[in-house]
Length: 247
Image (cartoon, rainbow, N blue to C red):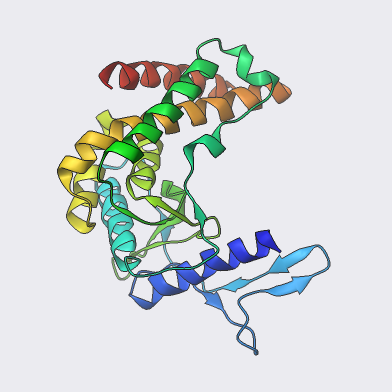
């Protein structure tokens, strides 16, 4: 029941975003108005198709649309609330398991970044709201016919500092050195002040880099990993070191 309520909270967020003109894959409600329908092994939902192609993380113009659409979605959700949206808690994101010990730097990095993010959340004035929680390029849709850009995949939505989503997007774009256009477009479209971004984004980037490294290590531990997993781990370790040194 908890998983269903969280899923439906995300669907409600998508419905809200879609109503404000950003294609979000809004749910098609059942005849009785329900967002989901129970099946033997869970629940299902039918969503409207958002036309277009996925954004390309390496394309500078796509990165600007990426930031603009994420900022616009955050702004449209400013007054949206739902009791079953999970709250962002950095400590709950800490992975566990024997794979963490494969990389000696990773365990301490995860603990230190969680502590750093918690300090930022306590000591800084952050802008809170509804998080998409997975704003990778593949979840954005650019319709070449209209120029409209949508954001799908809201099932895991939650609440927390909006910069948590921006940090995830920046990391997915290749890191801060590759994402200036994304960040600038986001700040123009959202309600997050630039000085807040400059103060808090580095800690959240560190957290997301460490979590992404943990995911890569888990895949490597499970089956040897692919070459891209090994390459990603090397890149993430270097990026984490660069970001942590700047904190």
